[in-house]
Image (cartoon, rainbow, N blue to C red):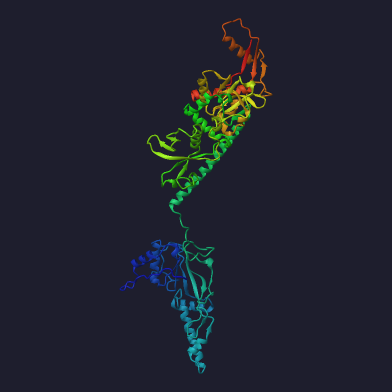
Length: 620
C-alpha cells in the first residue's frame, strides 16, 4: 500500500542498543490527523529493538488502535527477557506478522520429538524447520547425483519437489531461490502468539481465519476487519455557526408565532366586526362629507368655510377629499424643484420625466395645494406647514429660514377654474336627490366621511333619519355647525336645523359599513354583546317598530320602578295607574354607544362599560 510516513530510530554506536530518546521523538512525530495517517505501522526490526519500541508506544498511549505489523525477526517471539511482563494480563495489543511455516505432518512431529529428547528443547528455533528441510534435500540431491552419471547436485536440486517438508512444500526457481515459500500468520492475543492463517508471496494464496484475529482496542472475534485507515470525523461547524443556527431557528419560530397570532387576531377582529355589524339595527357609514344644500348655497357660509382659517375644518375637508369619488378629483399634479445632485435620492416614480429635477408633492400636500389654487383662482398663498406657497410667483418658502424653491403645476383633465366651491372641492358632497319639502323644517345632519349612523326611520326610500354612533372627527363636525350658526346668528338657516349628532340625510351618500368604519365604533363599545337587548325585554319581532309592554304590578321590575318613582316625589297622594316598558332597539343601542363614548372621553377608563338600565317610562 501507499507509504504515508516513514522514519528511522537511532541506535547507540557504542552499546548497539536502540536510543530511548529517539524512540519517543519518532513516535511523537508520526502524524495523528486521520486524513494523513494510517492505522497500520510496519516495524521491520529485530526483537531486541522491536519490544522496547512497542513498550514505549504503550507507555505514551500512542494511538491505541494501531495495527503493528512485523517480520519473523520479532513476530512469534518474546521480549529479550523472555516475558512480556509489561503487558497487562490478557492484553490484546493486536500485533500481527509473518514467521516461517511450521508444518504439522508426521515428519515435523517426529523431528520435533527427536529434538526434545536429544537436545531437551521445548520448541524449535524460528528457522530450524527450514534448515532441516535444506539438509534433507541437499542429502537427497547428493545421493541422486552420485548414482546418476552426468548430473550434479545443483541441477538435481533445481528439479526437486519436496511435498513433506517441515517448513511446507519445498520447490526452487531456476535461479535457485525457494519458489512460493509459505509462512505462518501469527497474531498476539490474550493467550500469547497464535497462528491465524497461512500466506505466501503468490497473490491470492493467503488463507486467514479473520474471526480468530485479536485487534488492538477492538478485541477478539470482531465480525468485520477494521480499515487500514482511521475514520475521518465529520468536520465540525464553527462555534459561531452553532450559535447562529439556534438563534435563527428561534427567530423563525418567533416570526411564525407572531404571524399565527396576528392572523388569529385578525380573524377574531373580523368576526367581532361582523357580529357588531349584525347586532346594530339599520347601520350605515358616510362615504364622503355631506352638508345640506340650502346651507352650501348660502354665500356667507361658503365664504366662511373658505376663509375661516380654521385648520381643523380645512384639514378635515382636504383629508376627506382623499376618500371622494376619483371622477371628481382634480387631475393636476404639483411639483417642487430639487437641488441639483440630489435628484437620484428620490424614487424615480416620483420624479417628473423632463430631466430638470421636479419632484412630486405627496397626495395630501398635492390636494391641499390644488384645493387652495382652485378656490383662490390661482392667486394668493397657501400654508403647507412649515412652508408657504405663493401662486403668483410659483415659489415655496420655508418660514423658519426663508429658503425658497420653485414650484409648478402640471394640469391634467381639470375642471374649469371658475367652478364654485362645491364643484372644486370633492370632499363636500351634494346628493343627486334634492331635499324634500316635507323635510325642510326637520333637523339636517352634517356628515364627515367615516361617520357611522344608525337609521331609525326612512322617507320614500331615498332619505333617512339617523343618529351618529361614531364620529370620524367629532370636533370638526361641531365646528362646522358652530361656524354656520355664528355666521347667521340664528339657530337655523332658511328654517333648516343643522345638527352634528342626528338628523335627515340622503342615503346615496352612505354605504354599508366596512371593517375600517366599524373599528372605531368597536373601540368605543367594546364587546358587541353590549349592544344586545336588556335581559328583561320581551322578544323583538321587528327592529324598526317600537314595542310597548305593560308591566305586571306584581313583578319585581314594576315594584322597583314604582318605588324609585314615588321616592322622588313629595306628594304622597300620587297613584300609579300603569307602567309600560318601551322597547326601541335603535334608541337603546344609540344610548349604549353614546354613554360609553362619554365615559371613555371623560374618565379615560377603557374598561368601564355602560350598565344595563331599563328603558322604561311611567304613565300616570
